[in-house]
Length: 501
Ligand SMILES: Cc1cc2nc3c(=O)[nH]c(=O)nc-3n(C[C@H](O)[C@H](O)[C@H](O)COP(=O)(O)OP(=O)(O)OC[C@H]3O[C@@H](n4cnc5c(N)ncnc54)[C@H](O)[C@@H]3O)c2cc1C
Image 1: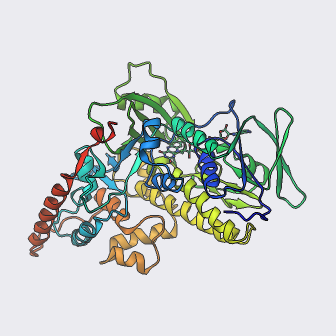
Image 2 (image 1 turned 135 degrees about the horizontal axis):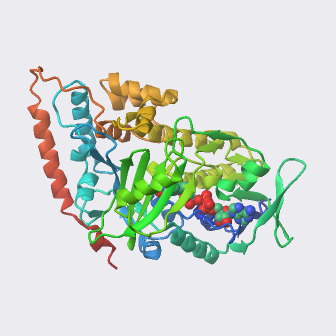
């Protein structure tokens, strides 16, 4: 909490999308003595997509002390065990794999055997190293079970959510206002900069001026304060992430409610399928260098069985990359104004949460000065680039050869040194996980996540059929693990049942 003699009397947030209202809630909960004001434009509106999260959304709600039961029903929200990647690989046996979140407490039983068998498979032994066989979350997902166990079950499972982003925004706006945040509907027409380069206020379309000590730019892809006014540079990820557009449309929800996001590779990108309580959200994320918006819409309709339907489609453009500085002078950029990594791993909310939470920590530690601005920017840039590397790896490791898009992605030389090193370790190291730690390669994702992806796509050498090594013990251990997982699964309810109030 701020001291009474702090100079930080007022913070102005520009933008009322998910990012703006997340920032408003966190600030209002933690810095109760500071006046928080948010201005948003009804005319411009919000982007209104973004329906999947990582476990960070839970961390956010925990931080503002809101339980699942308080917000989920308002936002048609469901639970997410992870993501199934379908048709990203054409290798027989690896056409689909499920990706769990990291940090489950039961990992201590499952991860060691997974790595043992992955390493054996990397040496050419005919051991089953498909990740779907090793994790409780895959089992839960396969059987449409939710991630909340019975009370007596000793392990926790990490989970994310699916939600209606417009309803989430509304919920957060109401909650923040109850905590004292003031909300103004207006267009910001001008941003006033002081002689020292700091911001002093914004001019609204009714001519009024709002002044503040600190500003949070949540103006979405417009990036009104950080990029347009303060001229902070933007580092594009386009050379390694080709996708720059999406087309979105809903379908009816199924009787049995899945507890996972499904990502299906199409000819020039991938389609998401996200279960909400009342509908599926669907979208095709593609590169406009390879396919135009009409072709993309037709392909999505075909994929969803909606060719004859008049369901409206929404088309969106995406600017993929990040700002060079997320905190500069007396301004912080959060959400799409600070950057965006295409939605394959649904990380935007996680990045917004990390940005606000870490900023508050550094700002407070530095007595509300810019003392830790460089450290903060280095951390957040590292996080962005780390997630970028992981998402790029999906495209590098894809095992499809049916279009220029997939072939160009696999052959793309524009990958970071870090990703290069990780891929080399995968091919050469007898201890992939240990060497990732040894060579300081752990960033946004743990070795388990990298191994799940690479094993899930079947990035293995050919099985050595001449090997005389007896690997039956590996298989037996796997059978015992499968039995353990099946018994764990008895402690979980069907997802639909879990959500019934
Ligand atoms: C195709 C796609 C899929 C996505 N999927 C996911 C996902 O699965 N998971 C995930 O976490 N994220 C996802 N995202 C990202 C997610 O949509 C955003 O991170 C999230 O909605 C936050 O957006 P925002 O608040 O930064 O911007 P916006 O929602 O665009 O809000 C911007 C705000 O600024 C206001 N504004 C702008 N200019 C002015 C002005 N001059 N005056 C006043 N107000 C102004 C607007 O009115 C609005 O209130 C996806 C994005 C895209 C494009």
